[in-house]
Amino acid sequence: MTLNLSTGGARVTRPEPAKPPAVRRRRRRPSPVRIALLTLLFAVMTVPVYLLLVNSFKSQQDIQDSPFSLPFARISLEYLEAAIHSPQYNVLKSYGFTLLLVVAVDILCILFAGPAAYVIARSLKRRTQILLLFFLAGTFIPSAALIVPLIYVLRAIGLGNTVTGLILHDVAMTLPVSIFLFVGFIRTVPRDIDHAAAIDGAGRFRTYWQVIFPLTRPAVITVLILNSIGIWNDFISPQILLSPGSGTYTVTTAIYAGISQYSTDMTKVFPNLLLAVAPVIIFFVYMQRHIISGLTVGALKG
Image 1 (cartoon, one colour):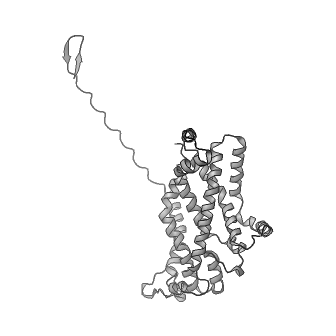
Image 2 (cartoon, rainbow, N blue to C red):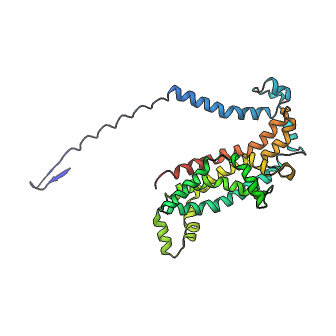
Image 3 (tube, helix red, strand yellow):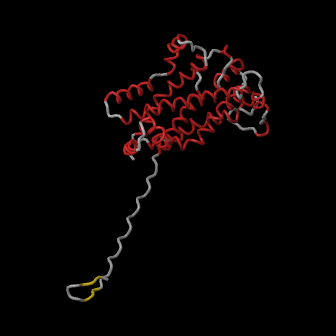
């Protein structure tokens, strides 16, 4: 009802009829080509995992005769137990050293990549952008191509065939991608936060570690996950930088040393491979949502 003040009376008006809701668009069915490609990708990713899982509990004859089958009556845990209790090149014994290597590299990478990315992200100078391109260029260089000159450099500074040399190498290899991810995320943080911290008397070092760094939690988690999986699966670097005579083995080098002489005995190959990749698969499945959120949040302007 509305009032008509010019005539002094009240005039009742009917409300306008509500417009019918818009007809929802029908969901488009995925094309057959897309379904075929996704099915092919799913098979490529899952079939090797399935073969590794089922053949870790079968005998040599069952593996050779029917690698894809799952004979429930003949499945045994003895082969997996033999791999766990093997006195020679036990994969489980290399878990500790590999985990120590992962933790050390992750800590050093965060300490170096974070402040460097903060300076690059907050600076408008051309030289800092060139520095970012310099770091990005490192992602296009295969690590295997740097192994031979790296050996000479480590020997020249007295770090050849040492764990310290391997850690420094892994830190240098993980810095380019880590800096790139940090820069993309820090650029989404408003500069007003830096100005407020400066007004409170905080310097750039304190501003980063006490104000900016807690806000970069998604990027930190993404960097830690990607670096941890890469270091855990790395074979070339520890195999060459740590000679077999050192007696120090990562998970991948322990597998190579343990099953190279039993390459035709599948009851030793599959259980050891399962013990090596199981932690990585579980870790990735549990943390994959953090990887996706960390990679996408830096691509958005907030």
